[in-house]
View 1 (tube, rainbow, N blue to C red):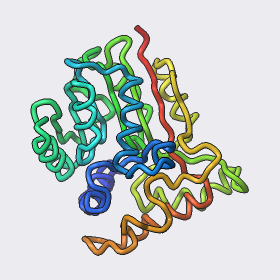
View 2: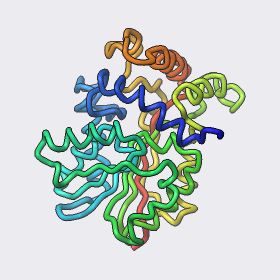
View 3: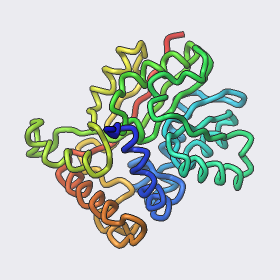
Length: 280
């Protein structure tokens, strides 16, 4: 039986998850550029970006949000903490979900931030949630792993209440410097996709177009590292120790660092944010 892309992603995080957790703690997504430049820690910079997104969504106490691809739960728990809302994090990997539950309980938020392990392709429908039932859907560097991103955006539109927002941060490919065409960009981006189990990195505009096609009104769509190389919270000096990691299947982690560094240095890898609202 052929392995689906979704299965590959789940299996990737069986070994990448412990490595990410050991090297980055609970916050795995890039941070706000100005926060990085101000010298904030990677965790505080990630929190600053998450706060910007949650504020844009207008999430309030008593609301319910869904965080897709919640990983080890750092951002979902932070979202619940700063908003007072209830947040459900979902992932297709139980190791990730278990770590997230532990983190929520350690912070006294196990009743407010809960984590579910869902089926590999449940992102296409989000069937457990009724139409118009949620006050926010969020994603942080997770939709890049989906082979059918458009299906996820359509499902998110369905489950959101009128006037509620989809907020997201994700990896993108882009033209930069001497690398302008798809043929010039591909030698840097394809190795990232192959090593890190990504079926295809989208562009800023491709995400915007898929959201619009699902019915969303786009309020924000921006490259978070405009006109600069996107090192974010993983600078080339390897201060976090990716190159020295000696855990399970460490060669995959080393390869991931190597190919991602090359794409960052070429400038063709970046991270973007979106805020999209369901019409009221």
